[in-house]
Length: 309
Image (cartoon, rainbow, N blue to C red; front, side, top):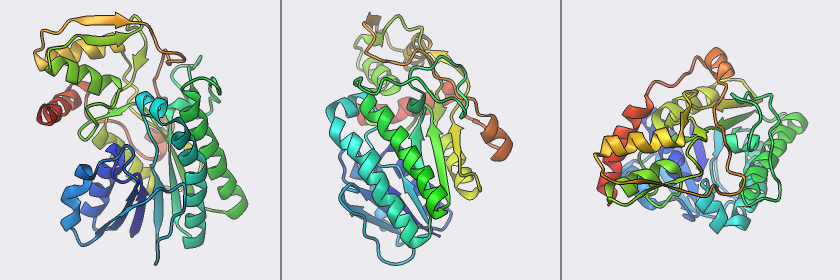
């Protein structure tokens, strides 16, 4: 197949490029490098089946020739990023999705949207099933990301219903692993870099809020299986093993052998108190479930971050 990946130089996008190339497909990555990095895909440039286009997908997407699948993964994806780039985040969720869907329609390609667990907002249901509509503050600081993804899902389903486009919508829960940026701002990179540098590990709130950490190789396997399926409605992909933020900080401190102190700061506005996916659909329809434990994934990620210092 020929596969187009927007956000292909990003954390997850670059892992997808690598996976599809290993399977023998032709891959074209598009990225404006706002939060993506060329270093993530540099080893792929020697592969004749790989092409990189530096381009902002909110302006236009022109790709000559046939395209079998389009995976729309372009977007800032951490609270630090979308606080810094609120308007580009909204634009890539709205205009970028529209451009990518238009190309998929033109090429008669399968379209996959990288949505997020953030569509559930600060949930009052746990674990979160795909049928849950969410509890989102549309005008809060996180709303630029949450609502961009909710709009992107609505537009994707409109193209499916009105144009008959084959679509896949993946709601990605907290994912971590190699190629995350050291300054990403999410819990795992923050805690790891602070621990490795001997700085205080900063936990926001009292640390009782939960996250469910999925290692990147498990996520990619789920994405590949979803792409090959016939499921047009949203599917949660993530690890249902729930941990408190405090437990994650303590595990990283132990695995790094750090002497850092854990300190507590006020919780950011609209920070979700719970994150745990209901992956019943993924288990049943995709025969998928996470295999790498949080501890094993963190060991690998810590080794990667040691090389980034």
